[in-house]
Length: 233
Length: 233
Image (cartoon, rainbow over all chains, first blue to last red; front, side):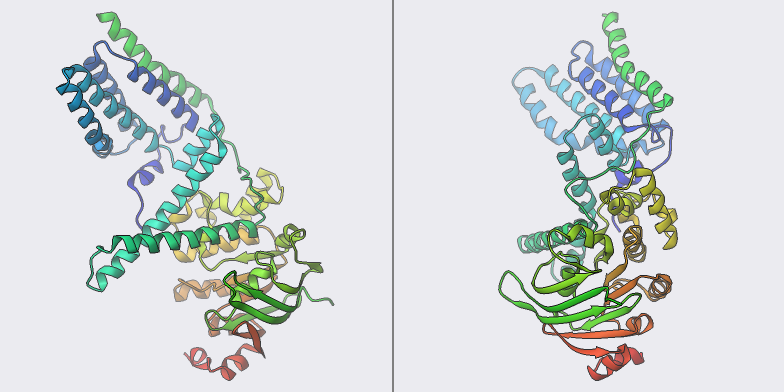
């Protein structure tokens, strides 16, 4: 079975893993807003936020190098825009773009790698996101693994007959047809167990005192850092 | 005593016009286990999907005294637990406990009661330790057990199992036979595995081109239709 690494990390155990998803999502939003709206002394502020995120990831016992490398996946996109901005005569803005996008990706990964996606989606739902959208995300996530395994079986079948995976269009069509068939079977399986168009959650997560304490600390840390750095000017 | 399932003159055509069932008559008594045998495409699964209203053909289907139609489908699905061939189609919820509770929550049971009954069902199939796991982290045999727990939790009167031994290794097949032998419910087993059917079923029917062409004990039927080599193995 092939599973995404993030999913494995998110099922580890640490004080951060045990926090309620809402206690991580709200600070994430605060972090992103504070970072996106900061201008003065951005390199210093970015370095402080980077250190804060690294300490958080070490505390969460997820591989720091692995998360740092995965956050860099956004760089090819932002570097292009940064280069255009640089050429247009605003190198500071280009550098800020790279810093902000990398730190944002790192912060998102810190939350995603410490919260299993179903739990995270439940947290998002409890914060008021549309239920239908989350249901689609949940199904997409659940069957991503099944479709991915199906694709790997097809690749192996093609390779075992001496072929490469060149006939990608044909293989994609078959993969789509199989996924469509499976979607029909899933719907039948849901109806067979009495589904009437609404998912009923088994249990709502409990928000403990430790979650409140973490929420206050994690939300105020980037704000306090920014205030302190801007006062230095 | 009235039969649990009574089917008379059932006909069904696929949307493309292909005749899948051509006048099927069938009955199932209390605590009886019946095997549906026959080649691929002979109509076994199509027939079974009519029993809980997932397909609707011409003819009469009565389950526990209720005629199967759109209005009675909800009640019928409480009485028939359907275990699908592909467990991945049946295990669509993010965690095992969420999945096993799915039917109970749809029936209107409270979250606490559903979780308790789901755990009891998981214990019954030896999967209680996997309650918090994601379904894609389970082996094929474990998925099958969880799928069975999902229907057992709903305490149906009749179990329909479609190719339950698919993807199972011999020890897992043996474990499944032991589990099914312990269950008091009436059972319909759709299978190509004559040995498996012979261990569990007192009666079998043989499907060919959408009709039941033979009825008797499993051993009699496999002999008369040339499937006895599979039993001698």
